Image 1 (spheres, rainbow, N blue to C red):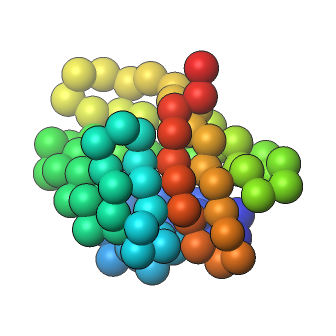
Image 2 (cartoon, rainbow, N blue to C red):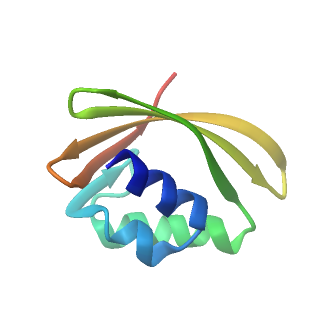
Length: 96
């Protein structure tokens, strides 16, 4: 699963990312379905935002993902908690 997440995010391909998501996947407080997650992700890509996975650490069903993010407003590091069930992502939340 780690390799699939890395490849999907590094590719900037929403279809590849969608393949990983459970139909009821959640991202943050606003996205509550796979379609909403993909629409949000596509919107970021359309704005020129790109992600490069720097690290993924597994802790049971939780993956701690460190991303380099670049976009029109600059570059930064983001940390996301990605919960998986089987071979699907069910939740993505920012980590502090």
